[in-house]
Structures are given as structure tokens and as C-alpha cells.
Image 1: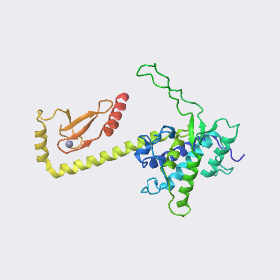
Image 2: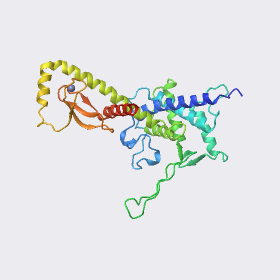
Image 3: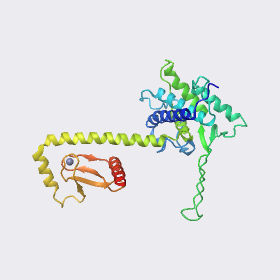
Image 4: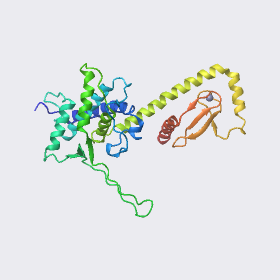
Length: 310
Ligand SMILES: [Zn+2]
């Protein structure tokens, strides 16, 4: 009975595992070749373009990405522990709390797939499917003969566990851990790993990727600001004023202009606004500060929240 842990501990473990999976898997997903990811790295395998050439042994995944083996192993271990703990609480760890390695967890899932009493696990199309406990409703059929007359689409019934691909990826990733050089991870291994995100205990990749994009947009903005400040210093106050006067001629530019947050002239030329119509993206005609649409959205959202508060 030493394996009994409180509900709070279970929830905490689930959160940590999902976060660990998200961080590592998102890093791996960011390096997937675009033509294979099909625009969405987390798309279930069933939705991939069937005409994609299958990755082969001479098609290693992101060979330039340092630490990819460790990222793969950490993401796989966390995801499988989260899934097993959610489906069969307690089966993910030994009595002393030591979490089983990925290979053991995959073996357990395979056994469940062969066990007729484990109804939530089935074998389908060469992989194991852990059925959703709360399946999404099927996309309804439209009126035939109209542009809405599309075939009803059935959402995936569960989480695809491509055991063969995951076991092979795990063995490849273990090579560097055991000091036997770099493993040869393939895109297929990483795609199989990303499929795990469909499970209800995870579903964290989309949000994590959005955070990553937002973070990199904000980093870029800091960079734009400091470059604009350096530029402003280089051209000097007189030149900045001369440019501001020249830019004030309304006949040349049709874009609306606002005060620039860097040089403070009314020369920030707005190309468009954020979703809430509060913050513009564009470029300053004096100091060249550039605000990207992503950063405008972010600042616009903050302004929107502030307006709800007041
Ligand atoms: Zn400016």
C-alpha cells in the first residue's frame, strides 16, 4: 500500500509531466521539416498527406539540433507516464514511486491492447488506439447539392500510440545516453511522439507553441526598440527633427500616424491594427522602430484587458 499517494500529489505529477512533455516536444516539433508537418506539427498521422514520401533511414531528423536524443527521451517518458497514470492510476510507477522507463510503459500498453477486458484500448491500422473517454461529436453533414454538402467528418476516436515507431525512437535516443554515439532519430519517430498529445492527460502542445511564438515576438520587439534607439542616436536630434517635418507632409503617405514609442514623434506609420483595434503595427519614419502584428496583438490584448478592469 506504500504506492498510495494523495489526489493532490497525483494532480501535481500530472501537471509536471504534461509541462515537461510540452517543453521538450514543442522544441522537437519546431525542427520538423515543414513539408512533413503539413502546416500543423500536431496533426494526427491519419490526416497527413498520403503522398508524402515516408522518411527513410537516410533521412535523419534535424541532425543539427543539439540534445535531440535527450529531448525525445524526456518527452516520451513524461507523456507515457502521464497517459498510463491517467488510464490506469498507479501502473506507471513501482511501489517505491520510481517511474517505469518508456520501454516498460509501452509494453504495458501493448498488453492492455491484447486484454479483452481493457475496453478503452484497441488495435487499429497497425497502431494502438486509446479511445477518448469524452469523444468529440462528429462534424455534421451539410445540405447535399450546396457548397455545404460536404461529407460528415469523424474526428479521431482516440490517441494513436504507434508502438513500433516509439520503441525504435526510444532505442535510438538511448544510444547517446548509453555513450554509444548519436542515435538516428527520424521524423516518423517525432511524429509518433507528437501524436501522444491527443490524450486527455496532455493536450498541451498547441498552447505551449503559441507561448513560444509570443515569446519570440516579444524578444524581437526588444531588439527592434534597441536598434531604433541606436539609430536615433546615430542620426542625431536635428536630423530626427528634419525627418519628422518631412514626414509630416500629408500628401506623401496615406497611412494613419501615431506617436512612436521610441522617438516620440508623430511618425509611427500604422499598417494595420490588432484584433481589438487598439494598437497599430507598422514602422516609424524617423527612427525605423518596427512593431510586428504579433506584438501589436499582444499589447492590444493587454490594453483590452485593462479597459475591462476600469
Ligand atoms: Zn520613432
